[in-house]
Length: 299
Length: 314
Image (cartoon, rainbow over all chains, first blue to last red; front, side, top):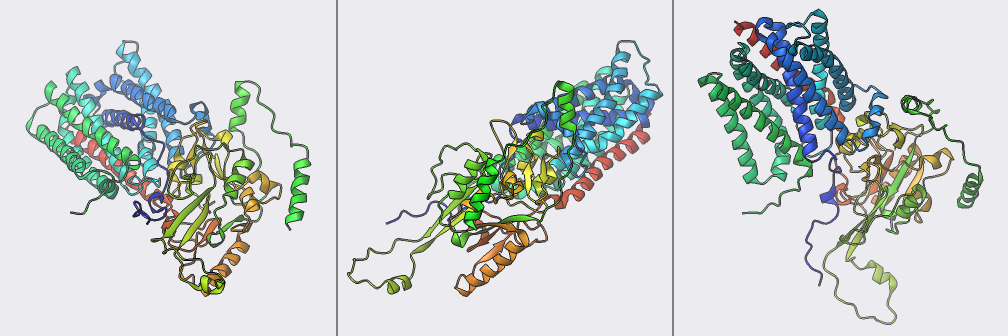
């Protein structure tokens, strides 16, 4: 007698793509630092253009900080390449219809313009440049601001334009990650403003609730897209725990913003309440194609 | 045909090797060569493969010929159900013969009777069936791997096949992530993407790919795509007439979500049985929408930030 078949007949279980090579902590860190770095730049620069008197004091630190974070992201991108010595081949073609190509070009241009602005910031910190940026520096910052839009969006599209389970169905990845990066920028700059003891701390505290609500809305849309793969690949316990964590922390952050004042403890707590779930959400999302399907038992 | 092919192949093999490009001298020349583009070759009629699984006997000659011709290393065998020890298409296995043993419980032992009637024996109900299939790259007309490649390493050739140019591949993994069929794979040895190139070097020498050449039953057929499609449709009709009601073509026609493929299959069962999706989706159909949603998310946040700051600033 033949033994009863243990697996479904045929190759039904292997239908689909190879798991993406973007696996482990490096791509998660890369994605997170990219979003934080661009978020810091966007909030600082838009703030300096809209409310110059309040936000300009943050620029000498914010721009170099953004450069450092995005620079580390670029280094991680290199590390994550199969053959990093060949990175320059990315500049052979410009394919705006290919998110990776759009990203490499826009991120490189963004970094170039940001380096100019950040150089002013660093010189200003040590007293070799005026406290407020001049017109040429502001022009560079505006160029960087324009390039920051594709540089911010491309990352999410890189994931959604794949055949990977979870990634391929999450249509709001780019939207949610970009909006989240602005919230992360508000949280990080809030800490900087508090420690510098400038009025920007209060302003950032006031604008944060609106961005937190937008982040929550887009996070819901993003997660809904990935939900079928999460059901398939995460245990029910883990899904519930992650859901409770994400919503609990967002609720706590909102309560803190509405009920608290921007003290040192409050801004530090708020930045943690924003950063940690942002990192965890990215980590879970990136892991989806590499997780095995959870076995289902009939009750 | 076979003998003339053989002579031609030997003639080609006897030709002196073509001169390769000059080696770059110095870093600047190396970079310049990397960024330079050659002239596009003249377009040729589209060619492809028609794999008729009803004729496959699972001999793996195609796998071996592919490895031989493309100088691919052997893999440690995987112990799986049935005779499949390749497992899946990979950077070093560009052909994969799949084995499905579709048998229920074995029939009771039959006593050997002298003078057994062969016709009666063939007419008896079968205990089951082997499903065998030789899988490879589908050479999609709108190939997600090609669309995903940021360096132009993945290209459509003059024969409308899809190949990787390993010298400009950075190993970013975009193509591996994009291919819905698990064809393109990254090599752990050099970090670059690899897959079936439909023996591009042989095509340029007007030879058929090694897999089709070695197939003893002509389960894998090579030729101009249009001719292959006509042949495939006729074969489906023949099989239907013979009682194989589930016989169907996979990849020969485009669907709303996926283009036609230049390597297509005649299947006897549901595509999933052979590890192929029934309704493949090209992720690129979502690109414009995903960019738009990204822009909506970012710009809404920035506008919200600007308006709120403008109103609340002291």
